[in-house]
Image 1 (cartoon, chains in turn purple, red):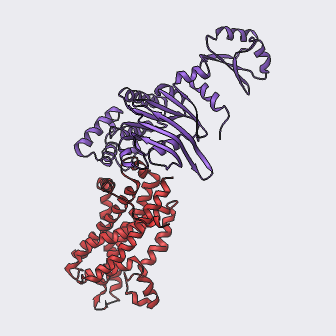
Image 2: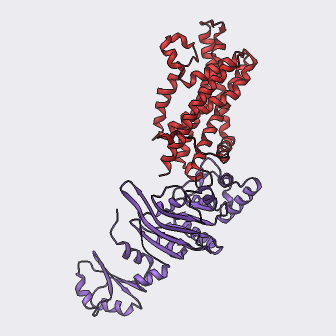
Image 3: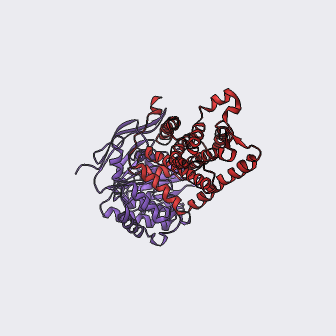
Length: 306
Length: 261
């Protein structure tokens, strides 16, 4: 099967400000791809050029074989989009948000009603059916947005930071629903700056910063390639890192030094190394599993980009 | 710059946006609409008609109270359409992000804006309907042809809804509309012949008034209220449609450049 999303050399600039600088990727049917990057990396701009909310200044975009700027209606009829902002309609009740939205897709009457009820069930909002939007929590609104994005049974679901600002329970419920959709074969493209979200949901991750893709791969592959299996964090305090490193053998393990922290990256078990550091008189040694966050910080840097 | 005045391509999906507004209105706001639309003409007619009318016996052979009926009609349509497409549309466009939500569906942004303008025109029609109703019940209608003022109110509504939407397209915040109401619309009713014949102001202001959309609305309503439907009414309608076209196209094209970067 051909890729459902095909993006080549995508560019966007506002005057002299380049926010997307040559992004290319493909998404296969049923795949879930995450754009991972800090604020201002160009994630949302990339999505907006797929959904017709922004015009690109360079490159090619094909969604289901169609250019969204040339055939916006056909493309949008096959997409479900969960925007970053709360765009629920506060003038309508919960169920009417879905029924009225269905009409924009040409779904009317009993079909719209049945679909709306089914989706409220799916996102656990059946009891809030007649409620006003103002009476919903942030997590409920986000679930309603996801239900709304599914009203047209889309081929592709696009989610811009689906769980930003939600409490842990709300976030886990949304992840559970997204994994369920993935198992049902929905193709998904999402942006996030939560590593855990990317690890839980995505088959493949594109790490984006400064409008470019810095690296890509499955979460496991990225962690393995860049970091290894385990990370040992050593709080140096006022100590100089060199004497510590010298005690750890020649050559010392792969490492990174930032301010008062020493990060050691290991491919195997870290217990021997931890014991070695502790015997050198440093108590604050924290071994843990390597995560995507380590990869991200390694690739995109630890400094604030703003 | 010419593309700013070109008519955007809109299709039947525009009506789904109109319908969204109708559904919201039918769920509660209609009560206040009807109350307001009834109160406004009653107040005008009592204050200006019975109050002022007792001192101003007649205008060109028409009792003063009947003279101001077309004025009250035009003002009611103008304000109903204007409020909807300034405060209402701006809320949907900016604070509620309703435009952004709908444009994620096959409905184009152009159709979203057009749907809001048509809804504003419909509110104008509703306003016109209630004035005709009050006037007829009060026995102030001079001729049965006043019923033609109801469909004509849709044209007047479309003009003022489009102009209001144009203000929305350039508004940064709600305060901006205060200027539109005080600097643009209020002088309109002074210069439109709504409450006194425009000739009273002398040839210069009479000439200026003839370029204002409210003048054409009042003049056409007056002809319909006084039993003179005919070609001059069509002439006024064409003037109104010219204003409507320019404001309609401009507002949609400006909102598109405002929202889609």
